Length: 410
Image (cartoon, rainbow, N blue to C red; front, side, top):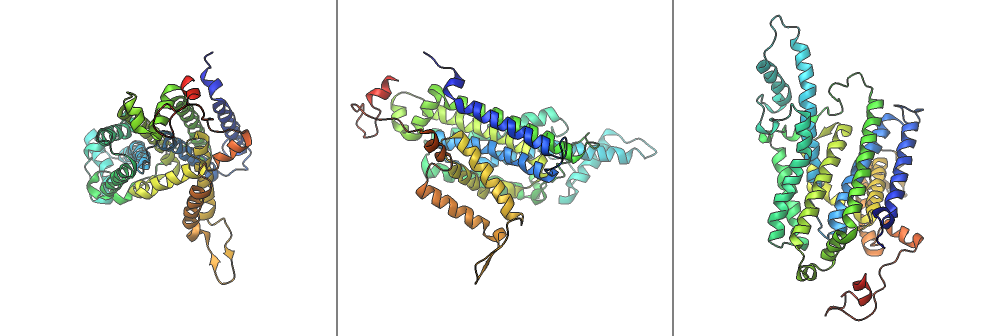
């Protein structure tokens, strides 16, 4: 008897229920619509954390399920932020320029308004003309489309070139890291059209919402982040369930055998790589308006390495593990680096967590890799009694890890 998607994936309902309760609790306790026990700044932190959980799901989908260790997925995250940031800067600057020029005796022409906007935005890098990449910055619908299209097209082109050449393993990881480094170095240049090292700032000031207090705006973005995380989790769970999920897990475990069975390995990998890039772009578009600023340092390769660490600590190959890892490490990082963690005096030396947090994170990654490869998510396996498939019966192939008769019948 064929089971429904929910019946085969009960964790989806559990996750959505927990996320809904969490969202309701933050709304009630927040300053915007609630009793004010949670500050606006912390609501923003929680909203950004949900966005990081969403990009962690994308990383888990491409690495934990498809076996592609991408060290460049934060580049797609940053590109999504840049796309929405361009509209936010343009629209906000346009309002300021129009208001200031309205006092002039002679009404300004559209060209004069555009020149003034360009001077305000690019004066910091010694320019005033709009680069080609800002061609659609005046239109919110077009920039929202670019949030999806730019990361998706970059992943599609890169993935097609890499997968058709059958680059795998550590070589593919190095290529993705090189792509991220090249993009970051390009964006650091003033003539990149995106204000170089200055990046895009003031993104928390939403055009047309000047009368809306930040406490209320932070709750709205928190809701949007929670909704995106819920949708992303359901989409990822749907992708990894059924035949498609079995194929990409097969590619992860033994790519040559899956290719021998007649499956288009490159097509499956390209689909997953592109889909996860789009998810990462959407997460970035929600993250940076809450952060308020984006610059090329956000796209540096180290950010993508952190993303892999989050997924590994949470437990790759488990969507909820990716969410747990990203949420846990992100909030812990905020606590340690924000000066809230008390210094540790060991007699001959005082440990300042602001300086030692990254060392602690790296050590945690090493320990998890060596002693708990299933990560935090593996604890749920122990609690629920979840085990791997019981392999027995006659071998169906020459390898010791070949599928057995019982699994072949399922």
